[in-house]
Image 1: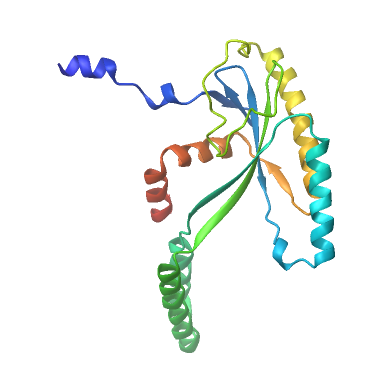
Image 2 (image 1 turned 60 degrees about the horizontal axis):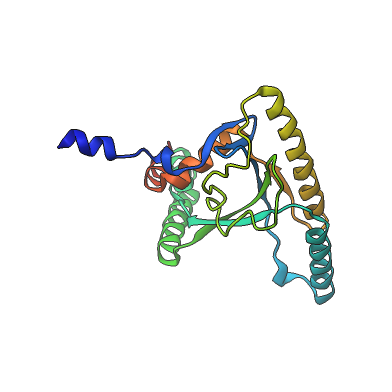
Length: 219
């Protein structure tokens, strides 16, 4: 009975359409590849009316200039302030000035209480840029970071040769350059995630409990 259950059980990889991550590129099981860019934020509300109009106009031009789909994703999670507070506590132990020591301890207590009461959320912004060997339509990406991990399409070829991967990667990063250039014109800076950063990102997305525990312990 136990053996039958184990045969029916599937690993997490069976439900994720990622084949591998290499050279800063997410390789999908259906043959497509993805680049993930981290993007800076832009406080639109603090801009003047003329600046807002200019940003909106530039953003419209940017979207109209693209002949492929892109996905903008906001990843939110509760802010973990413990490593910062631990650093301050270590400085308190080394502080020779009693007044500064007392003030730092009060500051630590204040920040800790404020974060606990306010439930502050840290937001990270990403841009997903896709490329496949088949024809790409604007319907390709859904509304979350993991939504582009959709079931394989038989019409798309699997990347199984290094030269083919290099060719596709080159075309992908031509798109990345176009996206980065378009966004910098509205004041948004981007940086592609490398292989290690991509692995860390997806590990955190699919193992949120373990990731939170690691951050809490500073691991």
